[in-house]
Image (cartoon, rainbow, N blue to C red; front, side, top):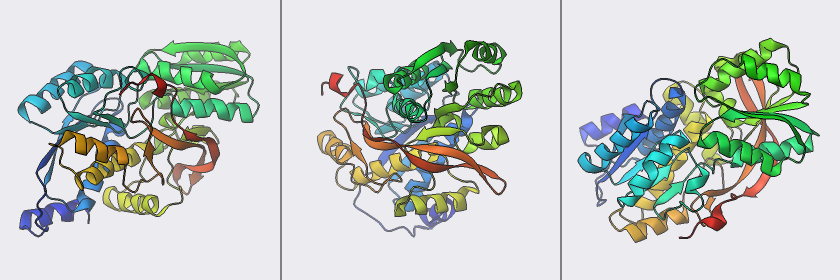
Length: 377
């Protein structure tokens, strides 16, 4: 059932009546400005799963955080105090997650993260009502470091923006990477001019470049890097090479290897159906973010099948069980409510007029995260 047909059926009273209690979900995500494509994809993947469920007892209230922590906090207060939501989700950026998640869980709300996974919330700052359905921030960067070893990179130059996810990125890469560092630097969040950084790379003697620059930052860097004439192999996480970003980058990204826990060619029935239905509904291929939104909604739906959110203990247990069909195939949570999963290496290719990724191998198998031991729940 498409979103349009779901809405029509609900309006005409054609959906089957159930004994389910009403559930209200608050989605705060980035829908405008830099990085809006990420939030739009999370929203669209999430809403596709809600529509496909056929349930008419779920209300989703959606707000734009504008990628501003103060706005996100204001919206959280509104969601909890005025909208009376039962569950919160949607945040893309780790600095916003750090501002919102502890406040939400302190008020007894469940928070399901479809993206941001800062280390502080995976270790000592973990909470029984916080579940991350995507990854812990370090994971894809750890896989990039592991991949760099397999292809013989021994002197990487590494860079990321100066915010929690950027720091987790470089920490993750260094955790698995066995070579030397030709340089390490943090850029400004939202930066678009990378001439100085590329000059440093050129002069560094590096044999490779690892970078984490999500959204528009990655588009700007890749285009400027391609134009610079610096001819060093690049490795990065999926965030800088995902479906929406690749169309803006174009040929400059071809051949780049990046790491992800998901790709459109993962061979399982749920993923195949998701890719087909998302493209049919929205007229574009799904991204990593869309898959995470879809999985987050289906996790939530699986828990609601067996417990009402008002029974917090039962609902929490149902979330932990993760009894849903994920686009990633098998899905399970570690003890700190973060996924344990394979992380893949992907290569940017061109299929017709579309730039996309294809799987080339597994970079890390059954990877949890480095902070679970610090989580006391």
